[in-house]
Structures are given as C-alpha cells and as structure tokens.
Image 1 (cartoon, rainbow, N blue to C red):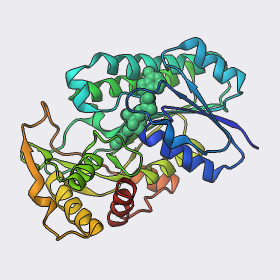
Image 2: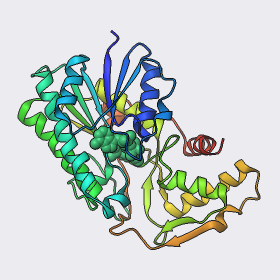
Image 3: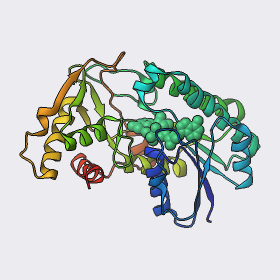
Length: 323
Ligand SMILES: NC(=O)c1ccc[n+]([C@@H]2O[C@H](COP(=O)([O-])OP(=O)(O)OC[C@H]3O[C@@H](n4cnc5c(N)ncnc54)[C@H](O)[C@@H]3O)[C@@H](O)[C@H]2O)c1
C-alpha cells in the first residue's frame, strides 16, 4: 500500500541519501521531508526526486510536526534532523541542545499526540555510536554497553536516545533506535574529514590531521546505513536499539594516506603527490581515541549486512566530489 513517510533532516547528508534509497525501494510512496535548511542542508541533493515534498521548518515546532503527521496520515517517522558536527558542538553547544535534545523531545511528543496509542505507527530515531564514549585498543561498542558521551554533540544525542527510550516505556510509543558508526559517501558537507580531504587534495591545499592521526573510526558507506534504517523500520522490535557498523576500523592517518593515493590515481597524478599536503594540527578537545561497532544483533536478528567494500565506497565517494 503506498504511504507517506516523514523524514526529518532529509536535506542533510544521510537524510538525502536515505530519501534516494527509499525512492528506489518504494517508488509509489510519498516522501515528506521536514528540514530547517541549516548550513548543513543542500536542497540540490533532492532535485528531481518524484513524489517528494519539502517542508521548511524546525523539529522544535510541536504544532507543525503534529499537523504534518495528522494531515498526511504519517505512520512512519525517520528522525535524522540534528546538529551533527562535533567541532561545532565545542565552539557553540547551544544549538545542539536545542535541536538534538529539545527537537527530539518535540518530535516524540508530536508523534504521541497524533498517533494516540496506535502501535502500528513507528518512530525510528537515528543516533550515533559516539554515545558510548571512547574505547581502548580492544573491544567494541554493543547495545548493552553503558552510555558515556564525551562531547556536547554526543551528550545531546545520548539525551535524545534516553527520551526515545522513555517514551516507549512510559507511553508505549512504538520506537526503534539505531546507533551507527561514522558514515562516508556522496552528499556530505565538506566540513567533514573525507570530503574535506578530497577537495583539499584536488586544490593542492593542506589537509589537516588532528593530533597524531592515530584515532580510530569504523567507517560505513552511507548507502549501507540507509539499508540498515529501512531494515530496522520494517523488521526491528519495538523499544529495541541496534548498533550499525561496517566492521571497518581505520586510523585517521591511514585513511588519509589511502585517500591521497586514490585521489592521485583518480586525477592521473604521480602517487605520493597528495601525501605531501598532510598537515598535523592541534588535537580536538576531548577527542575520543577509538570507536568500533559490534553489529552482531542487527546482522543475526534482522539479517542486515553492509554490501559495499571500503575500496569501492571510497572510489564512488571520490568520483562524486571530483566528477
Ligand atoms: N554523519 C555520520 O557519520 C553519522 C553517524 C551516525 C549517526 N548520525 C546521525 O544521523 C543524523 C543525520 O546526520 P548527517 O550527517 O546527515 O547530518 P547533517 O548535518 O548532514 O544534516 C542534518 C540535517 O538536519 C537539518 N536540521 C538541523 N537542525 C534542524 C532543525 N532544528 N529542524 C529541522 N531540521 C534541522 C539540517 O538542515 C540538515 O539538513 C543525525 O541525527 C546524526 O546524529 C550521523
């Protein structure tokens, strides 16, 4: 049955990739995007998508969100809207608390009011692995782990996860939450490491690397994250959380070296040219050392697994930024 889904933050990086994904998988559905169009949004990413309506508005607007859910008969909410850049949360945390914490509260409250106990309606909250804090050299994040957020960004996301949990336990709202590792791929804002490095390499400009470059992240191709979101919405168990990751740990320095060589090949330059642009800069305050995800639960219980190799994902990403 064709339906209308609501995607918040659909003009951002993961949201716009998700909208393209849902369009391919569910061609008859109408997609309603609610987005405030902050600096991180790019409406060009949504151009040409059939049956898509963009509502410019704030997730903190209770009346607007409740009206959208009621008026369009929304039974599935994908909540991605957020302030997402850790560095910005250090220099200006207020908007992170407003959008990520108050905004998620408002979304939950609007859904609770509009759905009035109808358990067939579902709210998917998209969160991050950063809520678990930082790992040592071994071990991986998993769903049973205690939260230990270290940045204003991760703390605001952790708070929003707790609100989602509380709305399930207190009000019976049908919620599911995903905690995903670092995403990469097309349509990401150029402030983030991979697009920043690619565009700097192309221009021959310095590539900043925080601290000693030994921080580890588990990189997942954005399209694989999108398929995980679809899987959790359609098959996840109400009230549960799912860790999503690519089993692809990379030290930042190794990742940049790989990118340098791949960009050199892509541009037909001598391999080694871009590596000379690497510039070590003062470390981010409170920089978490290592993230890694154990995605056994979503893999075994819901049958999801990533489909894109790191080599292939990077090739596609470079081709997007340097066509
Ligand atoms: N990027 C990652 O690696 C990653 C990993 C795991 C989880 N996440 C989560 O996924 C979600 C999307 O991340 P992203 O990287 O696409 O972020 P993004 O910064 O690229 O996009 C965020 C979008 O939300 C919109 N937005 C911001 N404030 C809003 C508000 N008050 N009301 C309505 N819209 C608003 C912005 O305009 C933008 O379009 C976030 O919740 C983030 O925490 C991201």
